[in-house]
Length: 376
Image (cartoon, rainbow, N blue to C red):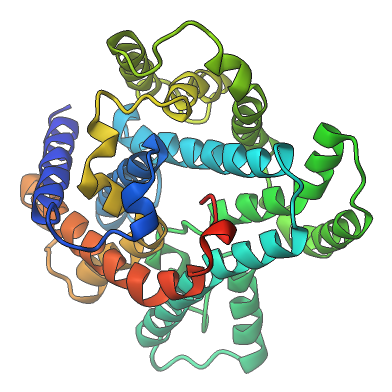
C-alpha cells in the first residue's frame, strides 16, 4: 500500500510540474489549442498513467526475473484502465466518422498509415538498435532477423538477433496496435451494419488484408477486448440521443459520478467484464463534455494528449535504457523507495522527448488542410 501511495503521489506531482513548466510554451498545435474536447486532456492522463504501471512492473522484473503484474490492483489498473479507455476512444471516434457522414475510405487509410507508422517505425528502429547492442557478439541468420522485423511491422513483438528480451525494451506496448489495426480494417463492415450500404471495394480490401494478417494475428487476438471497442461504438451511435437528456453533463454530479466509477474500476479485476462495461459511463460523460471540472482542459494535459502516442511508444524504451542499459539503479539494493524516486525523472524525460518526437516525426505527417484533419 505504501508503494502505491508513493507512486501515485509522485505521478501527480510530476504531471503538475510538467503542466506548470509548459503553461506558457508555444508547443500546442493551433488545432488542439482551439479544440474544445475533454478527450485531448484525457489522452495525456492515460498515456502517462501507463508509465507508472510499467515503471513498477520493470522493477519487479529486474528483482525477480519475471515480467508480471503486481500485487496491487491499483498499480495494475494504471495500465489496464488507460488501455481500455484508449480502445473506447478509437471505437467512438471512428464509428462517429463512418456513422455520421459518408466516409472517404482512401483518406481514412492514408490518415491511419500517416498517424501510426512514422512514429511506430521510429520506435522499432530504437528497439532494433538496443537489441543489436545487447546481443553484440551474436549473429543470428539474416532471414531470421528480417522475419522478426517483419513481425514488428505488423505489431507482433519478436526477438531481434536472437535477443530474448527484445519485447521488454518497449514494455511490449505494440500489442494494442494489433487490436487497433483489426478495428480499422473492420470499419467498412461496421459501416455496412450501421448505414446498410455496401462499399464493395473497401470491404473487399479490408477482408483480404485481414485474411492475410490473421495467420499471425489469431495467436494473439482475444475476443474480450472487442467489448471495449463496442462501448465506444455504442457511445458514438447514441451520443445525439444522450445530448437530449435533461442532464448537466459538465456539472458537479456528473463529475463526481465519473470520479467515483473510475476509482471503483481501479480496484476491480483488470479487464473484467464489469470493469470494461462500467468504464463506459465516465467515458460517455467525457464525450458529452465533462472535463472533471476543468482538469482535462488544462493546457499541459492537452500537450501531453497531443504527444500521447509518442509517450505510449517511448516510455518503455526510456525505462529500459535507464535501468538495463545505463544501470542507474542497483537492484540488489533493498531500498525500494530510492527506486520509486526515479519516477518523476522517467515521466518528465519521456514527456519531453515525446513532445519533441511529436513535432519532429508525427506532426509533419499529420499536417493537412483543416477539412481533412484526423479525429485522433
